[in-house]
Length: 93
Image: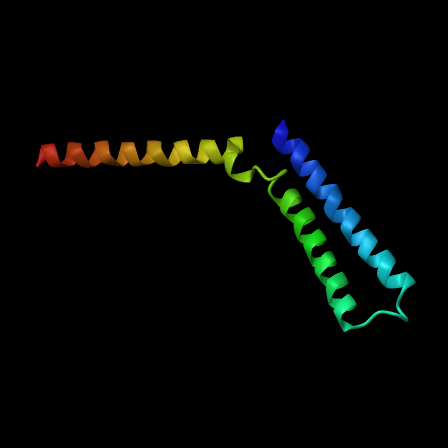
């Protein structure tokens, strides 16, 4: 549950950061210098990256999802089956 709460906070903070950066850019286009522009660009990139990370990894817990666990167990079982087959073949020879 903590991961989902943290993921939701990160996701919405990323969206909020992008919105604030766009608001600042729109309201102060006449007074913005190169340093301010790059700061706003960095805010947009950081906000989008945080939001996409949370979205793509299912709230930051992609490696620990049920599908990942099942796939890992399947790989282990396949390896064990192959080992048993090889042992039987070696015993027959």
